[in-house]
Image (tube, rainbow, N blue to C red; front, side, top):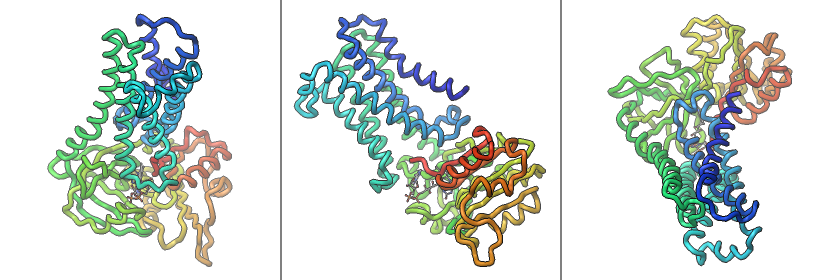
Length: 434
Ligand SMILES: Cc1cc2nc3c(=O)[nH]c(=O)nc-3n(C[C@H](O)[C@H](O)[C@H](O)COP(=O)(O)OP(=O)(O)OC[C@H]3O[C@@H](n4cnc5c(N)ncnc54)[C@H](O)[C@@H]3O)c2cc1C
């Protein structure tokens, strides 16, 4: 119901400019397709604006869904927005092919070329995002270019609307468009300037860096000169280390610590690329900026019947936070942890999981991809049959928390569907935003 309400709200938002135009003194009708093309142009511009708001990480707005869902919609809507914006000149050309000369990106009049370049910027944004990995574009430079192109696309679209001047003849409609563009630029100023400035006022300091099994490191940080922020087990934060919060070099990591042990935040970080491979060189006393908490991968959904956690690799990090929180609360509910990893020796938190099994009603099922010769436990992939062997019935009454590589998440969600678990009881945390 909530999802439908949001879709209706979104449609209302992006069609509002059209209703405003209807009450305007209108130019003479120029045929359905011509007017439809103009309408698509206005709605496309409004859709571009909404994209900024979606990724501004407003905590209250994102809290019920989790940021991964919001980013998912941002990606889907970007493609829809591009199609809508692209249809605008194509339909106009269909009506009047003579417009092609005006659309020349260099020789055309400025009020048309701004629209053309806005469209080019949109195309670059979508192509560089959809094929970022295939094109081997490193995340951080990609992100800077993404923001610059997005602001350029919107401002150019605003200038194009104002320059063409159709349907924006009265000052108050002009004001509407200036306000739409200005509020999007305002969102960027908030995210890129005001928020980073606030982070510099509430720094954290590294208190420890501990090695863990499986090329992972636990980074412990404590607030320096302030009280920190409350968080829930399973949430995550963006951290900035050895860089300024203005530099857009932040990385998201789940808390592996439990909020029931206040004073220190812990993140367990697996070596993967430039940043994560540098964690072992970090020393106590270094400054860290922590922007959080975010995410909805929390025990709010937990049922009295118990929980099933499914982890793949470093996906154990937020589940460790949940397990530690349950242990600190002396929770008596049944928990089954299915933990998939390649090899036994590298299983992060293996020893602590053994200790937690004696504090909680916890069953840990290790699933190894490359088990040793004498291994008698589970092996291979997480399947419906494997889950059925270890999760007690009635399975549909339990809540499921899944975190790991996208392949494992998809396979687990499929397997749970086969076992009759409603999708609303499966909560996933994806470690991959783009
Ligand atoms: C919600 C969430 C929670 C996460 N929790 C953990 C955790 O607890 N432990 C852990 O080890 N990893 C976690 N990750 C993954 C972690 O953020 C990436 O592994 C890390 O940022 C990689 O940076 P790198 O420079 O070392 O690697 P790179 O080789 O530069 O990047 C590898 C991949 O990581 C992603 N990535 C890189 N930089 C960023 C960035 N600044 N922001 C977002 N994604 C980026 C991109 O998809 C990239 O292709 C989490 C990710 C998300 C989205």
